[in-house]
Image (tube, rainbow, N blue to C red):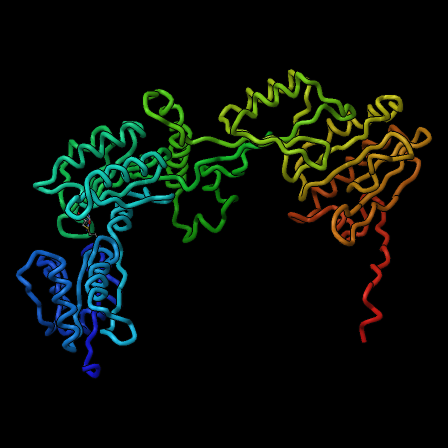
Amino acid sequence: MEMNLGKLLVIGFGPGNEEHMTFRAKEAILESDAVIGYNTYIDIIRPLLTDQEIVRTGMTEEVSRAQEAVRQAEQGRSVAVISSGDAGVYGMAGLIYEVLIEQGWKEETGVRVEIIPGISAINSCASLLGAPVMHDACTISLSDHLTPWELIKKRVEAAAQADFVISLYNPRSGRRTRQIVETQQILLSYRSPDTPVGLVKSAYRERQHVVITDLAHMLDHDIGMLTTVVIGNNSTFMYDGKMITPRGYQRKYTLDSEEQQLKPHQRLQEQAEPWAMHQGGSQTKAEVASAVDLAEEAMTKVGCKESEHKQSSEFSNEFRQQSIFEFAVSPGIANKKISAQQMLSIAEIVGESGTIEYTPDHEMRISVHTDQPDEITSRLKTEGLLLLPIGNVVKVKACDFCDGEKRDAIPHATELQEKLGGLSVPKAMTIGINGCGMACYGATADDIGIIYRRQKFDLFLGAKRTGRNAHVAQLVAEGVEPDQIVETVVAVVEQFRERGLPNERFHKFFKRVQEINGFKFRDVPDQVVVDEVCGD
Ligand code: SAH
């Protein structure tokens, strides 16, 4: 009997047209001796059939169809069991396994089973709507044929609450009309009435029909057994008749600029993405201009979403699109003392959801959810705090000048902060300024170290602060006149900005270029090899 065991080919044929059917699905249909499936599905794949027998079970029950398929395979036939979309998504795949398991089937000894994946409705319908899925999404079948309605409602509620993009399968039939109405009610208690909704009927089939509407008006349109309903999340927006869900919820702001350095309309400029434009030299100026207009409109939409949402305030909106604002704060260049009032202001701004991180660079790094960074910066500045951008920028780190007792170098430190603090550089760098020869704040361990001694400055370049081969900076100049020090350091930083490679650390840059502003790099002897004795 084992000799002529057959095969079950469980095939998802995709939305319904041949172009969107996989190669393996077509091949498997040709390989089969018999085909089992709903009559409408058989009609869809009929052009692909050669001499396969169409098994008409005469039964509408899927379970009986699965049992018949298994029975025929056990008789040695190759049986294609066809589902629309993917056979593993509300299709026949699970049922086939259930029937087999009931009979004690094992892969090693039983009939062979191959599940052939297909494009499910969530994907085919999304492609016709624009890009509505993009982010975390789920599918929910509204059919209570095999699932209690109470459970389906719970799932709708949970998905609505968790801000999933939701794809509703089996939304309504002639008999089942209530479910989609209740579903809309549940969704409206978590999402704005203007949340985009896409209705796709018969995707990639003859009677394909696509509607883009919103949560409030979705029931004004025809929804049936061949429709998939795609509900946007709180970030989904409509644009030029398309439904689009952005990839991320949070855009980042830093103190000086948004992290996203190029906005979409800037990206469309040739100098920004030379590979993307004028590829065949065929694009006219007018076409470029209209692309820029479209991109600008899209940006406004993404930006506007927030304010639109604010107007419709009755619904819970905890997932509203928000930005993260990140920056560093310190009590000042020379001042290391922070007041209780300043701490209170920081605490209020950070609130429950933000974070404060104390860094090795004498500053607190703040991260808050906000779309009004200006309000935060003006409040903290009023409190007398120094706000600094983070990322690949210059950080000026001074000592406390012995609580102001050794104050001669303070004006220079302040001037350096004004001229260079926060300036963008190829890689983050620190400039340490210490007010006496003790250099107890460790200026020699900074990228640029400046130490005030006998009314003059010593200049150090290129420390490597971290790692096993950490080293202090090289003393490149002694006794620099106070009225020269600022412009000397500015010149060194300017060279780094001009000639440094992206992400190149300052000490590596110094070693590579060998000379900065006339200061020569001196090679340091290599590290001692500890294990040399054991080598041979
Ligand atoms: N296995 C299928 C789903 C079967 S449940 C798949 O993965 O897509 C049947 C439901 O699927 C329908 O009620 C409808 O909501 C959806 N559906 C299947 N094919 C579709 C198509 N071509 N266009 C729109 N919706 C479709």
